[in-house]
Image 1 (spheres, rainbow, N blue to C red):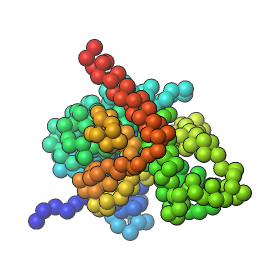
Image 2: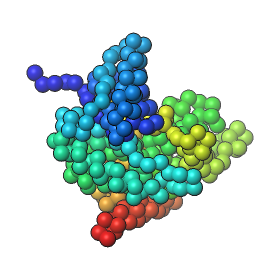
Image 3: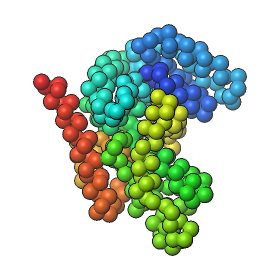
Image 4: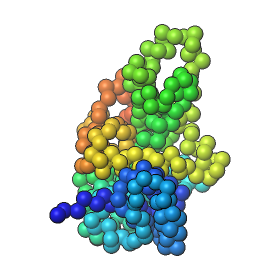
Length: 320
C-alpha cells in the first residue's frame, strides 16, 4: 500500500521557520514535520516545545529533527534560512549572503533524491526562488515562493479597516516584487464582488477619505514597520507558508499570490515575481494573467526589471 503520510521539512528554525511549524501543527495540515537548522540544539528545542502542543489540538502531528539526507521522500521542503536585513538595508541588500546559504542547502537536499516541491520564504524571495529552481533543476511548477501573498493579506486587512468589512470579503492582489517596487492591482480589487474603484466613485461622501497611494505605501511598508519595532516579522509569513502548504497537500486549487517563474506570462520571461497562481498538488498549476490597465502594466514591467537586474548581478558575481 502506497504511503499517504504528508511530510513537510522546514529548513531554518528562526522566528519564521518556528512560526510556520506552529501554524502547520495548529491547523493539522500535515502528518509529519522535520526541522533542520545549523544549530541542532535550537532545532531540537523547537521540536520538543512544539510537541507539547499535541494535547491541545484535535489532530496529532509528528514533529522531530532531522537532516538533509532524509528529505528524499518529503512532499514539501520549506526554506526559511537566510540573513535578515540590518537597519537601513532592503531585502535585496542581503542577496549575496542569501544566495550563498540557499546554494549549499539546495545541493544537500537534492542529493537526498528529493523530487517534491520547494516553498521559499527566504528573502529576497523572488530572486532566491528563481535560483532555487536553477540550482535544483526541478520543473518551474515545483518551485515557488511566498511572494506577495503576505502583502496581499496586508492590503486586504487595511482595506477592511477603511470599509468596515471582513478581510475575507476583500479580494485582490499585490503584484510584483516582494519589496519596494510592489503595487496593488487596484483594477482588480473587489469588495464582496463589487469593484473597489466603483465603490469609491459611487460613494465619495463615505469613502472620500481613502487615499489609494497612502494605502499602497502602508501595505508596502507594513513589514518594515513591524521589523523596526520588534526586529522581525514572522506570524503573518508563517501563516502564509501554512496556507500555501495546505493548498498543495490538499490539492485545493486556491488562487494565491506567490513568487512564480514566468515563461511568457504577462509578457515577461526569465524572472520570478509575485503573481496570482492556482496552487495544487503539482505546485503552481497555472499562473492567472490579470488584464492590467496601462499604468499597472508599466508598474509590473518595472518591478520585473528590478528583480531581473538582481538576478543578473548574482550571475555576474558567480562568473567573476
